[in-house]
Amino acid sequence: MSTDIAHIATALDQAARKVEPVAQFSTRSPFSLDDAYLIQRASMRHRYDAGERTIGVKLGFTSRAKMIQMGVDSLIWGWLTDAMLEEDGGVVDLQRFIHPRAEPEVCFLTKRTIDRPLTALEAVDYLEAVAPAIEIIDSRYQAFKFSLEDVVADNCSSAGLVVGAWSRDFANLANAGVLMRINGRVVQAGSTAAILGHPLRTLVQASQLLAKAQIALPAGSLIMAGAATAAEALSPGAHVSVEIAGFGECGFSIAMQQREKP
Ligand code: OOG
Ligand code: MG
Image (cartoon, rainbow, N blue to C red):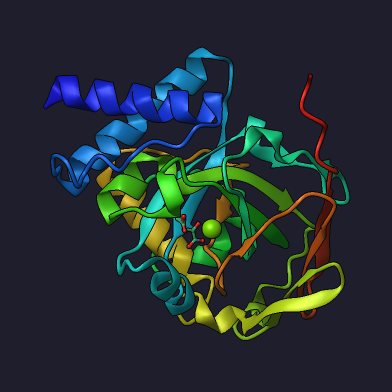
């Protein structure tokens, strides 16, 4: 299996770099979820070798809306790197993505190292701030289709993120309205309550998953809680924004497509 792990990790890294999708791996030769995380780790090593550094982690499939959209039913996690971070209010170029989608998220900033499983009561003590955010996901698989193992191996489709202004209003996170707009029109509407019943629960889940993987997450890390609604496909020239009631909004514009060189 170790040669398969290295092989799949390299293929996924290359797919992202070349902006060319690959066929799913698990359909041809099934692998376990544990192996999927080993592939994810091996694939991330290619990025670190290329100079990227970790800025935090993301959770996936923390809402029913996302599980239903993608046909999977378990919570997953992956890595965020500095190369994925886009400026709030900035312009995003789609050229480096295969078939990007945007989804509304809540982003946490940690203030203490997370190195053991936390209880729900402890979660806030480990947080510096919270902000509205947008995740840009981009599956490296053809047609954006995958099994749970495939998507974990592919670092959970992580590709980009935009984070809005920070606040410390954790008390009002339980049931805040979530709106995602494209060109000013609401395309997704939901509530932060869709995220595991309460977004702070994602801290408990993240701490358990990190402990299982024997990873300590340093203070100053980002934790993306997972989308509250389904994701939307992105196209050149569009403006995307996410508003979380009481927490403000963040957004980005998408560059117009550059002409193919003759
Ligand atoms: C996998 C990533 C899921 C979320 O917020 O649920 C995710 C995908 O949908 O491609 O980021
Ligand atoms: Mg997400």
